[in-house]
Length: 357
Image 1: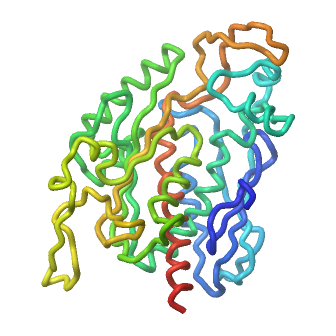
Image 2: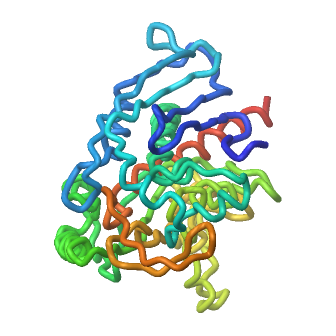
Image 3: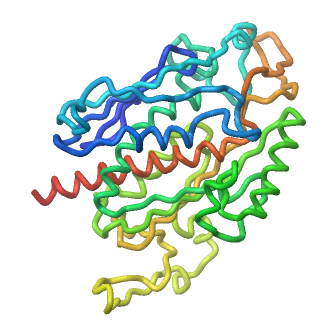
């Protein structure tokens, strides 16, 4: 399957480059006559949109979505849905000056190694700009999940070692770093602003919780639900780590501590677990408990500090990257994380229905 396509039954193919005319996505596998809300998709795009605050890139894009096909009178036709977002504020001048120089932390060298050509403008296809297409598709997938009362809540858990200690749901969208702890958010903002002033960047951790996910989603052994989550989230630019439930902390636990004890909830009339170290998935299949996922986000590679590198001919250079870049990627990755999780769940809902039909 081509590397630009994701999903089995609910499939998306993204297209476009950071400094090209547009980016977009084709969604296939959607059944006809589903109610379609472009406003809900636009709402998700607005959350990811650049230029929102002092702790994000200053690039100004309206990210207004256009529907080219697959929808009529706010209903899906069962044909491929094509969504396009025009690039209107790209500036390639700074990139032209360093087009033959390898930028540390970027994919220029590896793209040249793979294809023999690369779009050096803003990172081309490897740029975080590509994720706007995922968020558009995820905005539609969320509409499917809403019918099943499935909700995805993602937020910034940690930035540069500063971690959220409290969880206040309403606070997530109430501060520019999307942290559920207002005190931690203030400290995070100060840290990001300092890094920006120093010409540097910082990384962090984003956590996501899926609530009301039914038991029974996932297909062992190579299509386990957490395997698809890992593939989806690790495909996001700048994501360098993935864990679910207790994650790496489970390596320090005993079996008697880590095993989640089952019990029957009489009021809800269903099987539950008293703890959730498994993170809502057992044997690759959801067990009905909240799915808890965390990803590690690296510091932004584009920084103004001088860095040693070489050019295409092996000559040494010292590079200072100009342009408009996020000093921390976590705030704008939050809606991308939700989108990718939504795409996985929408696909597995169709897979389960297909298995039983």
